[in-house]
Image 1 (cartoon, rainbow, N blue to C red):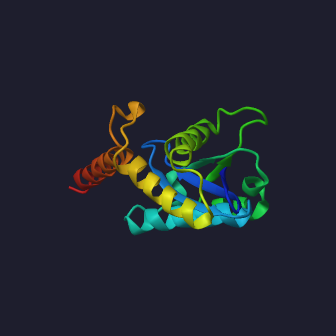
Image 2 (cartoon, rainbow, N blue to C red; image 1 turned 60 degrees about the vertical axis):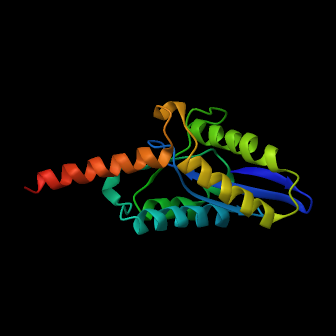
Image 3 (cartoon, rainbow, N blue to C red; image 1 turned 45 degrees about the vertical axis):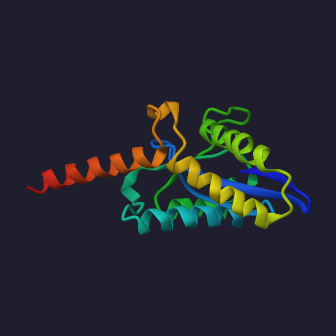
Length: 171
């Protein structure tokens, strides 16, 4: 979660990022820093994976890395992760290794979106700017860690390879 100043007050923005492809699977923004905000983001991420034909399953061995913010450590959020078979991982207090990718995405968001487009008036402005930035980040931004390819290209290649492996195993 990161925060953005608007003329009407703070707006909090959350992202869920797939570590493999660096794709932003889901994001959300709200005027209050709550467990519901992060819970809704997770729900959106799970819905997206399902809608794309890649539902999250208990046997996927997924790990959810986050900081020790109360929104992420709240029992209800942990329960939501547990229900779908995702293991929470918080690292140790003051140690950013578990949360390094999230902090990098937040920094990129601030530099490439917030700093470029501010000042923002309100939550609606943040929603519009963030939606544009996430689309660009996922579909057009070239990432050095991905051999200068956009995240959706890497993600699509992964799923295509997985499907080919499944099809060859069914013969």
